[in-house]
Amino acid sequence: GVQVIGSGAESTIIEPPVGFPDVYLVGIDGISAASLSRLTLDGQGTAHGILIESGANSVRIAHDIIRNMADAIVMDGSATNVEIVNDTIVKNTNGISATNNANIDVRNTIFAFNTDTAIRYQSAASTTLHQYNDYFLNGTDLNIDGVGHAADGLGEITIDPLFADEAADNYRL
Image: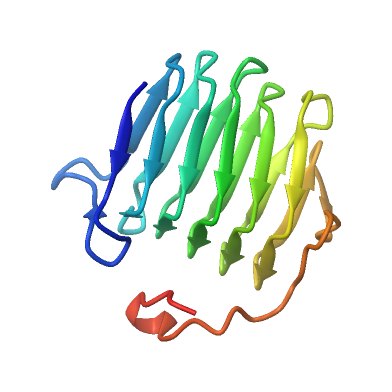
C-alpha cells in the first residue's frame, strides 16, 4: 500500500500546479491499502481533490482538510471501497460524489459551505454508511439517487462547527 502522511493539516498544504487549474490533486487508481492523512488539499477554486477509482480498496482518507475544490472527493465504481473519517470538507462545490455504485463510508466528518452537495451517492451501492457527521450551510446535505435529503444517518447533526477563523481558512474547532 501507499501512505501519504503530512505533518498536520495546518503545515502540509497541497495546491494545484501553476497553469494546471482543472486537475485532480490526488489520484488513487486500482490500488489497495492506501491512506492519505494529516494534510490540506486546497483547490484554489478550480481544481478537484481526490479521484478514487478502478476498484481501489482499503483506502483511508483521515484527518484532512479538503477545501476550495470543484469536487473534493470522487469515488467511482462498485468495487471501490473508501473510508473517510475525521475530515473537514469545506468551501467546495461538491463534497463527496460516489458514482457507479461506489461504496460510501463517511464518519465524524464536517461538511460546511459546500455550494452544491455535501454527499452524493446511489442507494444501490453495497455500503452506504454516513454517521456522526456535521452538515452546515451546504446547498444540499445528502443527494441520494438524484434526490436531495436532510442528514439522516446515526448521530448526524446540522449545527455551526464554530471554526476558529473560517475567513482565514483556519478550520480548527
